[in-house]
Amino acid sequence: MSTAFLILMTIAMFAVLGVLITGIFSMAKGGAFNQKYGNRLMRARVILQGVALALFVLAFLLYKK
Image (tube, rainbow, N blue to C red):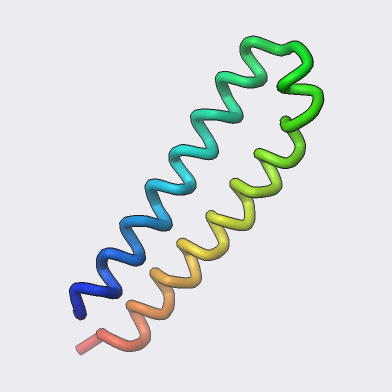
């Protein structure tokens, strides 16, 4: 597997993790930040998960033996 593709997959996974943690802490704290950005954070998480999953599927299809 190419190094660039592996780095891209790792970045996608850490992006999902970052948005997930931000969303969880936002919901736990509540307040104006959660009201303003809660839905956007969860929408971003779903989109990033889709990107990460697509990269995994692409890696499986391109690099299977």
